[in-house]
Image 1 (cartoon, rainbow, N blue to C red):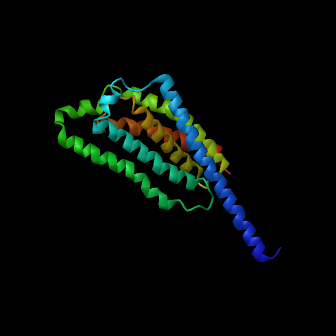
Image 2 (cartoon, rainbow, N blue to C red):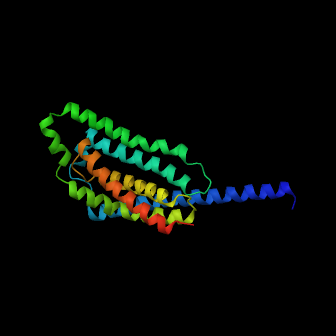
Image 3 (cartoon, rainbow, N blue to C red):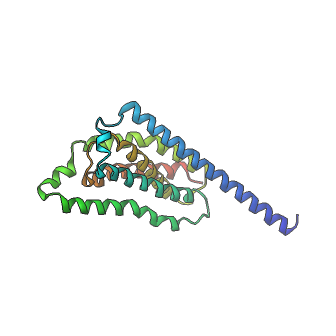
Length: 212
C-alpha cells in the first residue's frame, strides 16, 4: 500500500470511529431521558398545579437553566470521550447555566423583600430536592458512564464529572415539573448541590471505569 492509500485508509477509519462514538452518545442521551422520565412518572409525577404554575416565569426559569446545563455538558462530554479531540472550546459554554442562575438570583433579591430571602432559599422541599434529583439522575449517569467506556477519554475524571453535570441537568429539568419551590434562590442552592453530587459521583466512577 502506498502512502496516499494508507493516509486515506486512516482518515476513513477515524471518520467511522467518530461516527460510531457520536451515535453512541445520541443513543445514550435518548435512553437517559427515557429512563429519567420513567422514574419520574413512576415515583413522582407532575405537581398538581402544573398548568397554572407553567404561566410563571419562575417555573420556566428552572427548565431553562437545567436544559441549558444539559445541552452544554452534552457537547463537552462528547468531545472529552474521544482521544485527541479538542474540547476546551466547549468548556466556556458550561458557564451559561450558572450565569443565568446568577442573573435570576439578582433579580429575585431585587424584587423580593429581604425578610423573605431566607424562606425563599430554604423552601419546603430542600432535602427532597437533593434526594429526588439524585434518584432521577443516577440512571442517566450510569448510561453516560457506559458511553464513556465506549470511547477513550484522556481525562476520565473530568469526563465523568461532566457526565454527572449532564445527568444532573436532565434530572433537574424533569424533577422541576414536580418541585413546588420555584424561587431562583432555591434552585441556585439546592439544585446546584444535587447536580454537584452527581458530578462528584461521575468523576470518581469514571476514574475507575473509563480509564484506558
